[in-house]
Amino acid sequence: MDETSPVALDGDAITEFLGTGGTGVISLSAGDDPPVSRPVSYGFDAETRSFYFRLAAPADSEKAGRLDGPASFVVYGETVDGWRSVVATGSLAPVGEETVDTELLEGLRRVHIPLFDVFDHDTRDVPFQFVRLDPDSLTGLAETDAPE
Image (cartoon, rainbow, N blue to C red; front, top):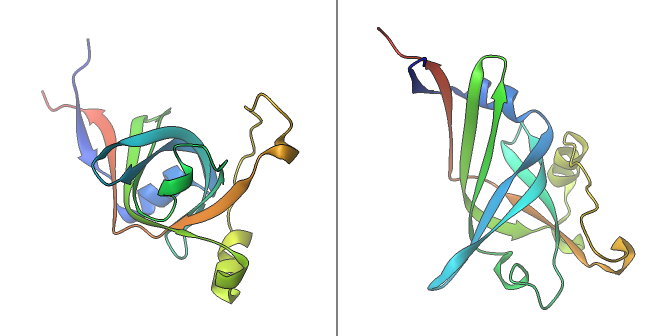
């Protein structure tokens, strides 16, 4: 079995791995309750280093009350060069009509948020909310062969 060890990804490698969007796992905190973790699709704007999410947020969901607080987001996957992972932490901010400005619109034009239908009823009946994560921390690791 080959030995591997992780090495830190630099900013350019993180941007390349994230692309303009894909899927990952978001964890949302609320007080002393355990975080709620869910697989989600994302858009990533390399220019502002911001993540955008289109999240289903029915009023009775665990996510609904946690969309404007601390969060962590993980993207991981196997590439031709081995496994990669990126972790972003920070606070989420709702993106509503009142917060739409030129920078936000430009950021949304630069991302691609994959849309997946994993709901058991018509998505026209599911309330969605756009949120943005401007990470306080953005780190990445890459698998590499361990020195012999």
